[in-house]
Amino acid sequence: MLIRTRQNNPIRPSEITPEPIYKDRRRFLAGGAALALGLNLAPALAAVTSKNDLPKPFADVATGPYATDEELTDYKSVTTYNNFYEFSTDKQTPAKLAKDFAARPWTISVEGECNNPKKWDIDELIKAFPPEERIYRHRCVEAWSMVVPWIGFELGKLIKHSEPTGNAKFVEFETLYDPERMPGQKAGFFGQVLDWPYREGLRMDEAMHPLTIMTVGLYGEYIPNQNGAPIRLIVPWKYGFKGIKSIVTIRFTEEQPRNTWNVQGPSEYGFYANVNPQVDHPRWSQAKERRIGELLKRPTLMFNGYAEEVADLYTSMDLSKHY
Ligand SMILES: Nc1nc2c(c(=O)[nH]1)N[C@H]1C(S)=C(S)[C@@H](COP(=O)(O)O)O[C@H]1N2
Ligand SMILES: [Mo]
Image (cartoon, rainbow, N blue to C red):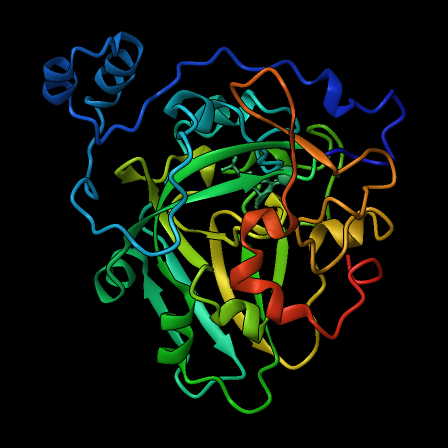
């Protein structure tokens, strides 16, 4: 995410250096099978080895619906090229500064316009709503994209369990506010860059859509801190900034929630933030994107390629106004 008010030249997407890439062929292609087929998978095997040290609580989860079969972005890029302003405004530093962040114990409060509010312990929540693997395209408004094997459960299931009242029209989310643990929230660390805590929101039908998941893992392991441990939102047809990280509050509301980037720059970041190649960001085009690890840009797809599933939600709206 780029800050509009910054004095120095804003970084253009065209200047973002491509990460060194270790193309991870689908990890499901087991080494043995690859050998039998005579494939040379040296880079893939190297990537797999580096992940073997990590606990894999979700190694055997079921595969959910809607998964893309596009090539996965390698684990290293997914976990070292991050936007997480609570730790840093650059993309390499969150992985370093979030290394010792304690994502447990962790409580998520479900509250607001509902009959069954509850303070969930994160592990109790994971037990109640068993996660599955969802391989989704992940598209930042800065015109880079990835394909990530997220592990999560449908937000809709948690919403149903919480019994929203008839007044609940939106769902609001908040990130932890704790400057001691999230140094980017300290005033003066690099200035008060955002209005903390980071906030996001969805309309109720968007929140109930089966593509929308609460994400607790990736690549079979617990979600790394820099990707939003212990729980973050993923809404694959929207720009990445809707995917709020390290959530502590989920609140049902009657009014449309204020969302952090819209407050920061209303002409640049809307509430809906649907991926749309026809509506440019005021300072750059959204027509193309660079898949991390690839040299040439590719055309961006309407709703990030999920139009068939979600276009119905927006038929009565002018998407150039509701960007
Ligand atoms: N709390 C919080 N959530 C956040 C952000 C952030 O700075 N703080 N950045 C957003 C942006 S702009 C993007 S593109 C995605 C990046 O997710 P990733 O690092 O897992 O790829 O997280 C989103 N969620
Ligand atoms: Mo982003």
